[in-house]
Length: 227
Length: 227
Image (cartoon, rainbow over all chains, first blue to last red; front, top):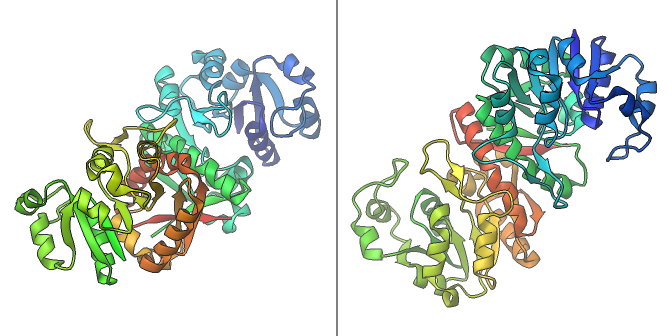
């Protein structure tokens, strides 16, 4: 499958590496491919500069946002929350088309220090903002409640017995994405919360998630719904 | 122990009934005791008018907010989020003193229909508002992430193997409350998230909790942190 991933940070890289390993054609979108490859400063979080990462993942190709969008069947938004709307705009509405966009972004605002606040919440969400700005796109919010390593390998915690959520207006797109999450990564428990307004719930869960990380001293955890 | 509970709704009644059953002296605070006993309209949620409930729980006594505060060693805020600050103000700063207040309230705003939004979030929380308004009070936010029946009987789901959170500025008060949650109700897993600003996390979890309720068609669930 041709998959376009927006964002070259830790989330984008983790998803890209896993999908390439599975044999998919992965295009990672960035604003300026030459500039991204020229970068020598490592991004936040201690990962290497993109060019160094690219050398160890030669099968993942770098493209402009527009090319990554137009040449892919399915899209993944792994950009930071504050960049998401700009990135999608620069990809171009025509290139995005009516494709499925798996939206992993969280509207985190680190500008006032730690812990981050949210740039949007309560009566709106980033998922809704993206869906409103690109009404043809099938926005499916998911994966945004776990750390990158768990996104692509839920079996790393509790044998994969824990929950993920999914939000979106298009029922077929949600069924398709839930299937891909299982096929690609092994996600067994994906709860459909409802339309894209339910993305408020998973985005607003982040402040609790960040505090749990603090308490556990590791992001390698998730929640399991028990009854 | 003498325990004062603010709020005569389903949460207040459930906590009061359980604590009375355990042999504690429970005073339920209300604005106007005569008016509360005179009410014939059932509150939201299908529970009976207070007087009918009181008949089946004669050991629980009704008092004004001020009396419930002054005559108790420990206080429980089980009022609706929008009423909490007013109720505590009418209890009186002097009556509240330096006591521990177990704050179960959530800042839910039902005025715009379902699902509710929050009256405060992101950069502030109801727990913080209460702590700021009553700096002497030892506000300990907890129990606000589960439905009333689970608050007093965590064993009803998954044999009690799931998590509760606790937030507050006073370390000793949190240790004491965590001990009471175990002694009174049987809570085994209580995670200390940090100071009262971490109440933002548990209050902002409510929109997700409400959507999970919708998906599961029951509020009889909780989350278990798995690693």
